[in-house]
Every structure is written in structure tokens, then in C-alpha cells.
Amino acid sequence: MVDTATVGPRQRGVTVVRVLILITGFTSVVNGLLEQNPESETSTRVFGWFLVVLGLVCWWLVWRLRRPGGRVLLLVLLGVLVAVRIYQMIRFATFLPATGLILPVLVFLRMRSGPVRAWLDPLTVRGTAMRIPAPPRTGLARLGAVGITAVLLFVISAAATAVALWP
Image (cartoon, rainbow, N blue to C red):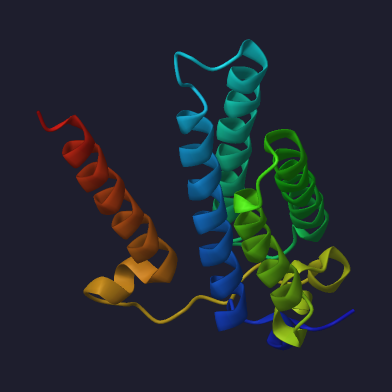
């Protein structure tokens, strides 16, 4: 077992992992909604809804990773994301979904760093304090990197939707 000082407050590496998963979830939700085209086959629409659910699971995991643990969940999610992107490449005969493989690979590589591994390992955090309180933040720092990323993705989506619906 590792003491609380080793786990300590959430490290920057964990924040990077959370931001990457947030963006991955965003791309899955957008990709899934784009699959809901009225001219699409039923199987394509079902696959699109699966992508939406997968994106929502990504967002739930971003929320879950505010506390230590969750390594198995993250590995399962990364495996599913990679399998889905490979399936998309095979089914639609295009390499565009391969760009969706980049983010899960980056998350996996970040998981191997020491502080992130300590944060995600359930054996490390069992029996220790879940989190050491961080000093209070003000302004944009209060939102944090994940919050700022979420706000930017929302603004970009709203702007793109407005442009698409403009007569």
C-alpha cells in the first residue's frame, strides 16, 4: 500500500487524461448524432445510438475520475473505443475513424505515467484518504481544465449548429 501523500491531490496527468476522455466522448456523441441521417440504414442508426451512449459513458468516466480508482473502467472503455473505431474503418471502408484511435492511445500512454497510475490503481488508494483538499481557486481556475474544455466544446457545437441551420 501507498500512503496518502503518494496519491495526494489529483495530478496534472490525471487532468490530461480527463480532458482527452472528454474530447473522445464529444467526438463519439457528434459522430453518433451524424449517423442519425434520415437516409441511413437501420443498422447505421443503431450504431450511431451506440456511439452516443459510448460518448455519454466517456463523460460519466470523466466525472468518476475526480476521485482515485477507476483503472479497470478506463481500460474497458479504451478497449471498446478502439474496437468501435476499427469496426467503423472496416464497415465504412475509410480511414477517417482512425483519427478517433489517436485519443484512446494517448490516454493509454498517459495511464502508464507514475502519478496517473497511482491515482487509477484501486489497491493504492484502498484504506487511504480519498483526496487531500486543494486550496480554493478563483476565476477561470475554479472551472478547471476539464470545465473549460467542456464549455469550449459546447460553444463550438452551438456555433456549428447555428451556422448549419442558418437559412
